[in-house]
Every structure is written in C-alpha cells, then in structure tokens.
Length: 163
Image (tube, rainbow, N blue to C red; front, side):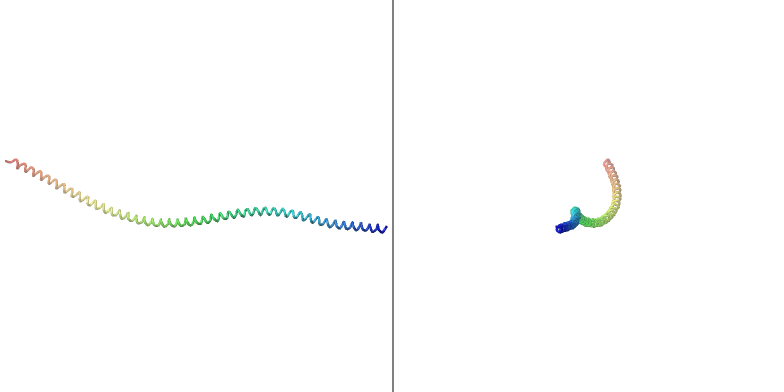
C-alpha cells in the first residue's frame, strides 16, 4: 500500500505539475487574448475614427468637386464674357475709327461750306453795293425826272395862261 501511496503521491505531483504547466500556458494565452482583444478594440476605434475621417474627407471631396465644377463653370462663363467683351471692344474701335473718318469728312465739308458762304457773302456784299449804287442813280434820275415834270408842268401852265 505504501507503493500505492507513493504512486498516488507521484500521480498527484504529476497532476499538480500538469495543472501548473496548463495554468501557465493558459495564462500566457489569456494574456495574449487580452492583449489581442485590446489591440482589436484599439484598431476598431482607430477604424471608426478613420471611417469618420474618410466620411469627412469624402464630404470635403464632394464639396470641392462641386466648388471646382462651379469654378470651372464660372471660368467658362468669364471666358465667354471676355470673348464677347473683346469682340465688342474691337467693334467699338472700328466704329470709333469710322466715326473719326466721318468727323474728318464733315469737318472738311463744313470748312468747304464756310468758304463758299464767305464767297457768297462777298458776292452779296458786292451786289448790295451795286444795288445801292443803282438805287442812288435811280433816285437821282427820278429826282431829275420829277424836276423835269415840274418844269414841264410850269411851262404848260405858263403856256396855258397866255392868251
């Protein structure tokens, strides 16, 4: 029996050693599981943060795309307006040049008209002087005629008064 006790003692000691070895292995594995679980939780939190950041960046990207599209449309509109403005400026320059030419033509025409008016004025003054001279001579002639008529009437009246 003593052999059985000893065998039993060795069995209990072997079982205790096996339990200690199993506990040690389980402890290491449990620590690894806890570390891995903590790591998983940290990574899950990081993933959520990254997903939030991704969603924010996605929203920003969409916003930037919209702003870029609007800026592109505004740039296209500005280019169109610039082309229209440049075309209008060129048209206005052509109109200005044409009007300047017309002004030069009209200025020359006015100068020619003024010269003709001066010539006509000189001619009218000359004709007015001739008219004054003719009126003066006519008046003198009329005065002489009236004097002759008076003289004739006096002569007639003298002749008629003679017996």
